[in-house]
Image 1 (cartoon, one colour):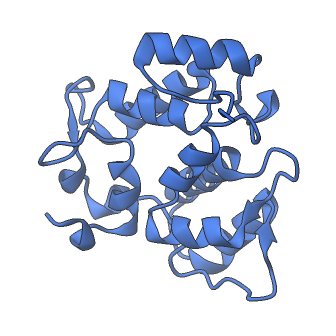
Image 2 (cartoon, one colour; image 1 turned 60 degrees about the horizontal axis):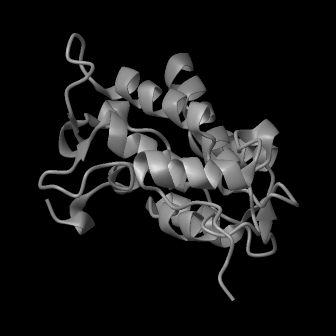
Length: 193
């Protein structure tokens, strides 16, 4: 399946998947992707395991998840039907949840709660460390399912370290060294002059 034929949610999952044909979501690929977005290791483990619980059919929880085969009923919201105000340049977490409320009406309670968690997770990983807001451009990329690469690029330096209360590391230097040694992910490195 060409990348243009994927839904926004499937394009989002490609970042967490292996670069194979077809793309597969594995525990390790999701773990490496979550760490590259700036999450602390234990938080990244929880995220990777929760992806397994949501999308791997039981009893095959440790089998690779083929992104193409995730049913549309299991797709999470990407706020694709929400319209962004041209006057607004940044969004708080509550404003993102309001966008969800205005654009995704008519779903069941469980799906709605999972979608809310998905939006909060997006805000947690994307929001600026100082202002705790997400730029309009990041929200637009989220709607298209392609927000992860710019965020991972920002997290390579130490200018925008996710705070501990949002799932970031206690000590950015130690986290950076450990993740590079353990799983080969370069995150929060000091920028070379």
